[in-house]
Image (cartoon, rainbow, N blue to C red; front, side, top):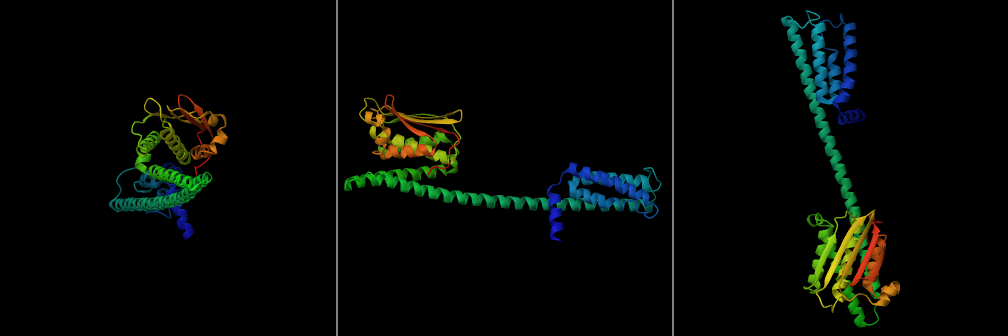
Length: 343
C-alpha cells in the first residue's frame, strides 16, 4: 500500500499537461475502440469506458489535460453511442438525463482528482522545503563550527607570534595589549561580516568601515583615506583574510607613518583582472627602513604585524610584497577563487 501511495505521489509531483495529453489521447483511442467492440454488452452506458481514462489523465497531466480528454470523451459518447446515433441531435429525455448525469459524474471526478493532485503537490513542496531548510541549517551549523575553530586557531596563532617577541615583562605587556587590539578588531570584523544589512553593501563599504574604525580607535583624526575598491565578489574566507590584511596594513600606517609635513593619506585599492585580485595599501609616510626591504623575511620575524600579514597573504594563495613608493606600499596578489576560509 505504501508503495502504491508513493508511486501516485511521484506521478502527481511530475504532472504536466503535455505528458497528460500524450498519455490520455492514446488511452482515449483504446477506450473508444473497446466501446465500439462492446456495443451490445454496454448498450445504454455510453460513457462508462471513458471514465477511467479521464481519471488516469488527470493523475498524469492535471486538470487541464483531464478536462480536454473529458470533453473529447463526452462528445464522442454523445455522437456515437447516444440515440439518434452519429449525430449531435438532442436525445430522448431518458437518454438525455443519462448523458447529463454521466457528464456531471465525469466533471465531479475531474475536479476531485485535480484537487487531490494539487493537495499532494502542495504537501510534496512543503516536504521539499522542509528538507531544504534542514539541510541549510545543517550546513550553517557545520560552517559555524568551522568558523569557530578557525577563529580559535587565529587567536592561538596571534598569541603564539606575540609570545615569540617577549623578552621582558614590559615587552610581554605590550605584546598582550597588541594581541588584544587585534582580537578586538577581528571581533568587530566578524560581526560586520555576519550582519545581513551591512554585508549586503559589499567590499567597498566593508573596507571603508575598517578604515573609519581604525582612525577613531587611534585618535588620528587628521588621517585621510582614498579608496579605489572594486565590488569584487570574494568568497567569505577570502573576504575575511582581505579585511584582516587591510586592518593590519592601515594600523601600521596610522601607527608608524608620522612626521610627514602633510596630513597622513592612506590609499586602499582592490581590483580583479584575469582571475587575479590585487590588494594594495599605500601611505605617504616616511616609508620602510632599507633592511626591511632588503631582507623582508628576516625583518618579518621581528614584526608581529608583518608576520600576520604574510600569513594571511599565504592563506589567500598569494605573497606579501613591500616597497617604498612615496611612503610604505603593501601589496598582495592572489587568485580570485581563494584556497578556502581564512583562519
